[in-house]
Image (cartoon, rainbow, N blue to C red):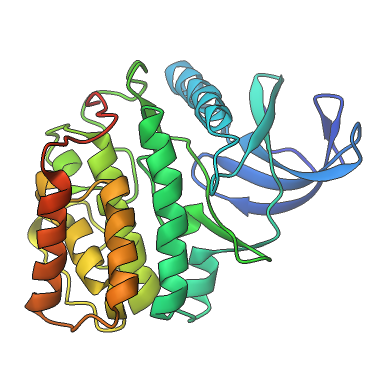
Length: 305
């Protein structure tokens, strides 16, 4: 079975691995050098542990190929990390992406630097723009969380890692009954196994991300049931974003705004800020949502998986 690559290795006859930047449950991210174009790139290597059963090996490879396909579909859309190439060596996929110089939102929060409302608004706008584009293309991300939010040196906000994304035409790649995602960010309907519209789940995860971005702590615990059993404390540091975050965290997916509706609300909240931290602010935005929804369903509705 293939092992983790080493610094200096050239994959695809073109990409020299320079430095490992990060690692996660499904792989490693490398800073690399494109020898053909003489530019820096990021390379994501799929993690394939020794002794991995054949079925799981195939699933992880299929997931990597699917991630590349989805991300490539969205490569020209703003606020999404572009994918340039995919190569496979010794049965291991390597995805070549734009190299982002900066930090993840998770790194910033781990350093004890939650975002003030004005900066959180920039993050919200960037992520909503990315999700609107993905949902219009029939793709739900399904793993929106601080570690998948990058902020580059210029301040641009980027959504990355479509590794468990689902397209309305995709076949299911995970075993029935397996909950895929990060506890505390997986929406209640997926915890219950009820399926539903995955794009609505992305908006719940965005609400949890924005809550943690401003409060410095996640709204729910680290177990899947926490989103079912617990109610998050009211945001205290979100400022004018509080009503939007509250709506995004609604446990009933039908009460959450879409990405497009959230962008419209964000503009209204920006114009009218500061919004009082009380029920009146949330009611005002709820009224706007009701008007926005009139005569319109959720755009780009996705098949449940």
